[in-house]
Length: 321
Image: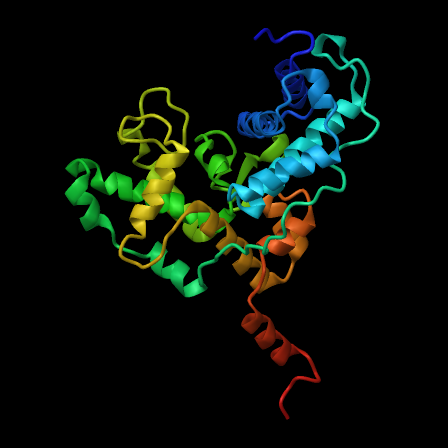
């Protein structure tokens, strides 16, 4: 089918192009939008720009109900509704004859359509003791059995530095994987600069243990890195270590500990432990790179027992006499 004029696909293409240009949306975000809008076309049966523009709230609600009936999780349905809502919001603001949008919409058909209620999923965090135990594990023997012998010690240095950096800084997986040796890492100042979501830059301090682990890795990184490779963390091939490989190495490090370790857990553990020690929610928000403090409030929840202990120790009416 040609994607010009009144084709629904050309309308979606125009929306995606706008997100890439105006909002600098990442490739991951654009791919997710494309999948969610393809689902809207499939569920609604809209095969033209006019049909897509003509969907009303009843049509959108029927699509959401079909997702629910097919067993989609409330979180997944909410994400798709959010994508559809963004699409129609853009459509209401724009008129593009080339994309078949002769006039803007008067009403967003997604307004008032709610997704099924979902429980707030709170991310899991390591206890301080669990974090210390993981960071101090001796996993060299396991690596000797599976990795090229002379590289086992190098891989352990690298993986330990990755683990310490995650726990010390709360970086996202993509942020850590994108780090270069000369691109934001300052071990003298004890800080790392990264560019997060929507191109927002921030600087996060590094702890003493993370700096020591990174120095140990950097002292021998050249034994693995290919000539001219800028990446801070490299694979056995000498090239930048992929995010998926980092996830696998973390899981491997934790084998036998009873903990399913992943980057998100380390990011949350960092945030929870800093918040427990400082109580400074705004500082944690800045270090995590959250645009809204509401996100930080959920992401860095404190367990009730900890709060109760703080209350009992600090509040004059709670102190035992």
